[in-house]
Length: 300
Image (cartoon, rainbow, N blue to C red):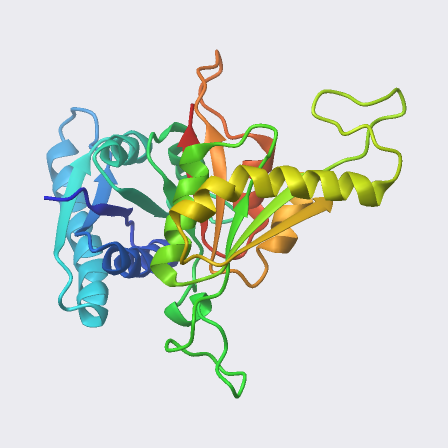
């Protein structure tokens, strides 16, 4: 069987929106969908057996709610569900190893809904070896689509742009391929965005372009971006691509570019650090402040 699209559910509004988004993505990718709920058993003590039975019952109810919602919208989708004992981050990261894609709600999984992104979502993004998509509460099928002629929401119009955040100094094939494939599946335009900055007062640094005037620097960066994507344009001839370079901080550029997009695709470098896995500052900003689903694609 093909690797499934896996979605973590916990009964929160965010996870239910994530389940519906994951179902749509499974249909697009022609993959099965696996609903997953993880819960921590109580340590061994006299009342633990009753407490754990209650937790299993709650897990069953959470999975049933998500399953009912998905089946109502996509009755023909191949669907399975599982509940796992153990910390949510570890369970989801492990499940991602065998998945085509992992989807989680951007808030709610940690239980601390005051944060823009829950600790579980952040931990999964930092540790997963497969692409992770974060979905916010309230995300609906029509949000991925262009408005109808009368300006209203529609699920029958074309898809909004897929936006790719790319560093032409260190382009990553896994991230670029994911974005092109997402655009192909949606028959959407791909907007590839690169942020650049002018050389510092002490001269150009590594990766800087030492031209005097900013328009020429922008043209140089655009040329680099087009060169990086040329092979991918040839591989995906049906994808309409628009390259854009902007002089600003990468986080600012991505947040603006993702406004009105169907999906933002960014990369996450997998590195081993003494303090454990972390997301980089650009990815961190994107998953906190972008209002469309964000795909974080790990790479070496």
